[in-house]
Image (tube, rainbow, N blue to C red; front, side, top):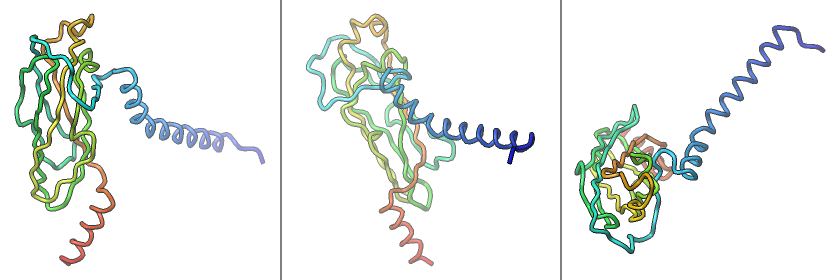
Length: 191
Protein backbone atom coordinates (compact mmCIF):
# COMPACT_ATOMS: atom_id res chain seq x y z
CA UNK A 1 0.00 0.00 0.00
CA UNK A 2 1.51 3.32 -1.08
CA UNK A 3 1.69 6.26 1.35
CA UNK A 4 -0.26 9.37 0.59
CA UNK A 5 1.20 12.90 0.75
CA UNK A 6 0.20 13.60 4.38
CA UNK A 7 1.47 10.16 5.52
CA UNK A 8 4.84 10.77 3.83
CA UNK A 9 5.09 14.16 5.51
CA UNK A 10 4.30 12.72 8.96
CA UNK A 11 6.80 9.87 8.43
CA UNK A 12 9.52 12.31 7.40
CA UNK A 13 8.78 14.62 10.33
CA UNK A 14 8.96 11.70 12.79
CA UNK A 15 12.28 10.71 11.21
CA UNK A 16 13.61 14.27 11.59
CA UNK A 17 12.52 14.38 15.24
CA UNK A 18 14.22 11.04 15.96
CA UNK A 19 17.45 12.11 14.25
CA UNK A 20 17.47 15.46 16.09
CA UNK A 21 16.84 13.70 19.41
CA UNK A 22 19.71 11.29 18.80
CA UNK A 23 22.03 14.15 17.85
CA UNK A 24 21.16 16.16 20.96
CA UNK A 25 21.64 13.07 23.17
CA UNK A 26 25.10 12.46 21.64
CA UNK A 27 26.20 16.12 21.67
CA UNK A 28 27.39 16.27 25.31
CA UNK A 29 29.61 13.16 25.20
CA UNK A 30 30.88 14.13 21.74
CA UNK A 31 31.73 17.67 22.91
CA UNK A 32 33.52 16.29 26.00
CA UNK A 33 35.50 13.89 23.82
CA UNK A 34 36.33 16.66 21.33
CA UNK A 35 37.54 19.00 24.11
CA UNK A 36 39.63 16.28 25.74
CA UNK A 37 41.32 15.38 22.45
CA UNK A 38 41.92 18.92 21.18
CA UNK A 39 42.25 20.93 24.40
CA UNK A 40 39.45 23.18 23.14
CA UNK A 41 37.47 24.96 25.83
CA UNK A 42 40.34 25.10 28.28
CA UNK A 43 40.35 21.39 29.08
CA UNK A 44 43.02 20.67 31.70
CA UNK A 45 45.60 17.91 31.95
CA UNK A 46 45.90 15.36 34.78
CA UNK A 47 48.94 13.90 36.56
CA UNK A 48 49.70 11.55 39.43
CA UNK A 49 52.29 13.85 41.02
CA UNK A 50 53.54 17.42 40.98
CA UNK A 51 55.98 18.93 38.50
CA UNK A 52 59.68 18.02 38.60
CA UNK A 53 60.60 21.64 37.88
CA UNK A 54 59.55 24.82 39.71
CA UNK A 55 60.41 28.19 38.17
CA UNK A 56 60.96 31.52 39.90
CA UNK A 57 58.33 33.08 37.63
CA UNK A 58 54.86 33.32 39.20
CA UNK A 59 51.35 33.09 37.84
CA UNK A 60 48.03 34.10 39.35
CA UNK A 61 45.22 31.54 39.50
CA UNK A 62 41.64 32.73 40.02
CA UNK A 63 38.81 30.48 41.16
CA UNK A 64 35.23 30.74 39.95
CA UNK A 65 32.11 28.78 40.94
CA UNK A 66 28.63 28.58 39.46
CA UNK A 67 25.64 26.25 39.44
CA UNK A 68 23.43 25.02 36.68
CA UNK A 69 19.87 26.29 36.91
CA UNK A 70 17.89 24.20 39.37
CA UNK A 71 20.92 22.99 41.34
CA UNK A 72 19.87 23.62 44.95
CA UNK A 73 23.36 23.75 46.51
CA UNK A 74 25.30 26.81 47.52
CA UNK A 75 28.73 26.59 45.89
CA UNK A 76 31.67 29.01 46.21
CA UNK A 77 35.46 29.06 46.16
CA UNK A 78 36.99 29.38 49.64
CA UNK A 79 39.58 31.82 48.25
CA UNK A 80 39.14 33.82 45.07
CA UNK A 81 42.75 33.72 43.86
CA UNK A 82 46.30 32.68 44.68
CA UNK A 83 49.70 33.39 43.24
CA UNK A 84 52.20 30.55 42.94
CA UNK A 85 55.42 29.80 41.17
CA UNK A 86 55.06 28.04 37.83
CA UNK A 87 55.47 24.31 38.48
CA UNK A 88 54.66 24.65 42.21
CA UNK A 89 51.83 22.47 43.50
CA UNK A 90 48.79 24.48 44.59
CA UNK A 91 45.91 23.45 46.82
CA UNK A 92 42.59 25.26 46.66
CA UNK A 93 39.21 24.53 48.23
CA UNK A 94 35.63 25.02 47.11
CA UNK A 95 32.74 24.91 49.56
CA UNK A 96 29.37 23.31 48.88
CA UNK A 97 26.28 23.38 51.07
CA UNK A 98 23.02 21.48 50.66
CA UNK A 99 20.27 23.62 52.23
CA UNK A 100 17.51 21.17 51.26
CA UNK A 101 15.82 18.45 53.30
CA UNK A 102 16.93 15.69 50.91
CA UNK A 103 20.24 14.20 49.74
CA UNK A 104 21.44 15.81 46.51
CA UNK A 105 24.08 14.40 44.14
CA UNK A 106 26.14 16.68 41.95
CA UNK A 107 28.89 16.55 39.37
CA UNK A 108 31.18 19.44 38.49
CA UNK A 109 32.18 20.42 34.99
CA UNK A 110 35.21 22.65 34.63
CA UNK A 111 37.20 24.75 32.23
CA UNK A 112 40.20 27.02 32.24
CA UNK A 113 40.51 30.49 30.74
CA UNK A 114 42.22 31.61 28.68
CA UNK A 115 41.83 28.52 26.53
CA UNK A 116 45.52 28.61 25.62
CA UNK A 117 46.37 27.83 29.27
CA UNK A 118 44.21 24.68 29.44
CA UNK A 119 46.94 22.39 28.16
CA UNK A 120 49.33 23.64 30.84
CA UNK A 121 46.99 23.56 33.84
CA UNK A 122 47.48 20.12 35.37
CA UNK A 123 45.24 18.62 38.06
CA UNK A 124 46.71 16.06 40.42
CA UNK A 125 43.49 15.48 42.39
CA UNK A 126 40.08 17.10 42.17
CA UNK A 127 36.58 16.79 43.55
CA UNK A 128 35.43 17.05 39.94
CA UNK A 129 36.82 13.58 39.18
CA UNK A 130 33.91 11.95 41.06
CA UNK A 131 30.27 12.63 41.82
CA UNK A 132 29.51 14.32 45.13
CA UNK A 133 26.56 13.53 47.41
CA UNK A 134 25.59 15.98 50.15
CA UNK A 135 23.11 15.02 52.83
CA UNK A 136 20.44 17.51 54.00
CA UNK A 137 22.15 20.47 55.68
CA UNK A 138 25.65 19.13 54.95
CA UNK A 139 28.48 21.58 54.24
CA UNK A 140 31.80 20.34 52.81
CA UNK A 141 35.08 21.75 51.58
CA UNK A 142 36.29 20.06 48.42
CA UNK A 143 39.97 20.25 47.39
CA UNK A 144 41.66 20.59 44.03
CA UNK A 145 45.42 20.00 43.80
CA UNK A 146 47.14 21.36 40.70
CA UNK A 147 50.18 22.95 39.10
CA UNK A 148 50.91 25.01 36.00
CA UNK A 149 53.31 23.18 33.69
CA UNK A 150 56.59 25.08 33.27
CA UNK A 151 56.38 24.54 29.49
CA UNK A 152 53.84 27.38 29.44
CA UNK A 153 56.72 29.90 29.47
CA UNK A 154 58.07 28.65 26.12
CA UNK A 155 54.71 28.18 24.38
CA UNK A 156 53.94 30.63 21.58
CA UNK A 157 50.64 31.76 23.17
CA UNK A 158 51.10 30.49 26.73
CA UNK A 159 54.09 32.70 27.50
CA UNK A 160 51.78 35.73 27.50
CA UNK A 161 49.42 34.25 30.11
CA UNK A 162 49.81 35.84 33.56
CA UNK A 163 46.44 34.92 35.06
CA UNK A 164 44.50 31.66 34.75
CA UNK A 165 40.87 31.26 35.81
CA UNK A 166 39.68 27.82 36.92
CA UNK A 167 35.88 27.62 36.71
CA UNK A 168 33.55 24.93 37.98
CA UNK A 169 29.85 24.54 37.32
CA UNK A 170 27.93 22.04 39.46
CA UNK A 171 24.84 20.33 38.10
CA UNK A 172 22.48 17.93 39.82
CA UNK A 173 22.64 14.26 38.86
CA UNK A 174 20.64 11.21 39.90
CA UNK A 175 21.54 9.83 43.31
CA UNK A 176 23.71 6.70 43.17
CA UNK A 177 21.58 3.58 43.74
CA UNK A 178 22.79 2.99 47.30
CA UNK A 179 22.10 6.61 48.29
CA UNK A 180 18.69 6.61 46.58
CA UNK A 181 17.71 3.38 48.40
CA UNK A 182 18.84 4.83 51.74
CA UNK A 183 16.91 8.05 51.11
CA UNK A 184 13.80 6.02 50.22
CA UNK A 185 14.15 3.93 53.41
CA UNK A 186 14.41 7.09 55.53
CA UNK A 187 11.38 8.60 53.79
CA UNK A 188 9.38 5.39 54.31
CA UNK A 189 10.31 5.22 58.02
CA UNK A 190 9.26 8.84 58.54
CA UNK A 191 5.79 8.19 57.12
